[in-house]
Length: 419
Ligand code: HAM
Image (cartoon, rainbow, N blue to C red):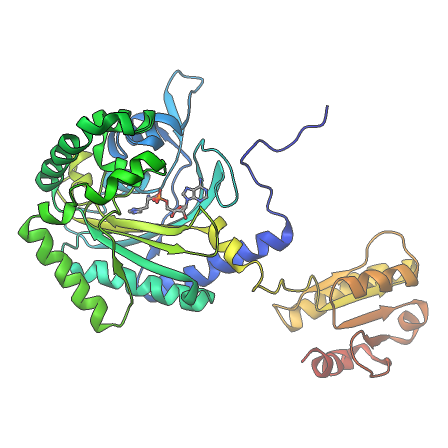
């Protein structure tokens, strides 16, 4: 029986992996310019961490976690998201104590979801978390930074920012009660999930994809009327900042987010280009979480973007870099010299991609490989070149003729043809 990858787990073949790498380096460089510092976090954490911080009643914790007992009997979970682990690490290493921090992380997350285009069981995120800043200015800076990231990835015109404020805990509780009062007499129009949420997490009913439930939403109470004055002032401050910086957004009172830790600002960047898995980035404030895990209270805000979804958006725009700039073709007797010449070329230009033919192969098949590699130039080394201390340089694109030159003149010739 053939062994295949597990459902929802993708192999990233080189073309796709190149897009992921492009996104990570582009985003990483931009995060540097805003003072974010990268942090590495474990893939495996105590199950308790997610149950407590992400929320017992969330779909992620109830249905989607890869949880198992390890060999010492500890209850552990493959991280379904990065915020809980980042808060844990920040507390464990005293990073939030009287300090301001801008941190980022990248890597795989795991959720046992129903796989489809843009939704996988292992997926990549880049996330940012900021600790110690209470005002709306950091929320605004974060959104401004994301706006710049979309511009630099070339997807700015394909994404839209949707914003909401959840208010503070008391406001959300009052709103939850109002939702229960509204939906309970109409519970026969909800699906099973909706009826479950009515008991565990009424706000999440607003996210439902079920037609009967959606039909009830226009008349449902809106969160806006329950939000407290302080949260409203915070939200107005954020909007003023965004208006001033000309970052376009719409206020969408139905954005509640799927994880329990948010308060005040929440946001999602969505796209029309991906079908149903349309959210490419989501985040918001979570001012109570640090305290909830036993730390001294520290305000916090963050987001995570989904690389798999961004990669799908870039698929038709991204030009995969060629495998090689220079391909070295050689006779078997010249192979050691070919390796030496290749090293010299890598010393000459550190980012030059040099591929040396290894193993058997006649010149003809080596040239086929050279052509397929995308290299602009082949360097040919045979017995006669070794004896004369020369190399033959052959342009693979364009009309110029090949030239045999002393090895010491090779770089000058390549410099012309590699431009
Ligand atoms: P999230 O909304 O659950 O938030 O995930 C963030 C992004 O990860 C989504 O917008 C989506 O692009 C991507 N994503 C989520 N699930 C999948 C999946 N199954 N397949 C592919 N992509 C997926 C969080 O994870 C929060 N920790 C964000 C945050 C950080 N909030 C504050 N700080």
